[in-house]
Length: 475
Ligand code: 6PG
Image (tube, rainbow, N blue to C red; front, side, top):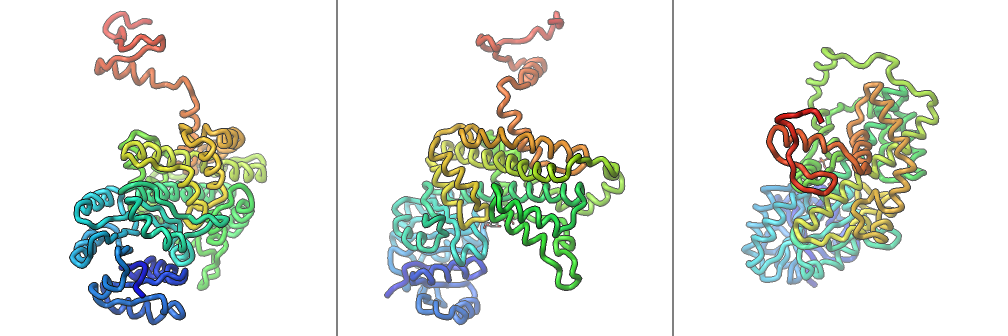
């Protein structure tokens, strides 16, 4: 019998995804640019060999798949995807579906989708989250494309996706770039989650002077509470791991420079394009950039110094650690609220009709930001799918009211102690600006009118006015 699906690109993610597909009883044809990788992959597939058709030429590969042929392309994002698509195209037949499963920029996905529109082939842009482990045993899968092409792959994707209490973490989210856009925002939130955890770690390390394994204990405790999530779980593990060579905590030996491949940055760029604040995500992206400037930071420390010893003060250590837990939860709410607000604006902008409760649902398992918390978001959006913002849904409004004082104390202590908390502070700033009915932009408007005669609306409803700036400046 023919293969149900094909996969090109046997790198780490591609291999694991192919094994997952085979293991769930789906016959799969595989192809790699270098034949050696294909042979090695097949040789190591063990009992799963029966479900795998290793192909050494693109002709054999295409012939091995049942039409209309769904073909997953799992290679480096960008140019290589266009090249692969161009190489594949002459071998395909009407109705065949090219599926880009990499971390593509959704604008590329829209372009590719449009490019194939009248060719008789279709294109799916599919976000896959969960790293190596997720690809192998159950990722979260965010699909964008035509509903018709999704119907062709739904069964296979459902079989390989992670399950949350039996619910598969895969969904069709909308046309063209919808899947890759949602994956991008997933990653933006992932950046914020990770940065906030790192800031809390910094307070425990540099403020409370705790060792890596002591901090690991704290995170381990939190993982049993409301912060329960994959990222908190691995943070405990990471902090407790000892370096085999020196016996020292591994984290203490890791250079403090973090890389980035683009998804976080794209989240922020798109948020800015639509005029939606995503400040916590932006702070996280900026923090990675500052982290990369290691030499510059070291030079600056010599010039500017650090705040005086003793500047960081807490009255009651245990109460403060409790504040860190609640404060992190509050800040996390801010980051997710921003991510969902960006998706909601994009949904209108690109005409996707993104289903917010479904997105929260398929993030509950398999992906990097999976957590208990996402089940609460699912419930909140199911009850109020049109809520203006996550933080004004009843459940999250009360969570914010319950935890924001803790975030305030955490940020205050860190700021006074000179410990950088840009993501935590931006979440707090977001709450404080979002919930204040009377803000301060009246001054901005007056200034704009003063120097540019922009005009302003008055609070009594009468529109466009100019101020008495020229003469009689006294009110
Ligand atoms: C996931 C991850 C994964 C990867 C990203 C982010 O959801 O499984 O997001 O896709 O970690 O590429 O990578 P960077 O941190 O390198 O930008």
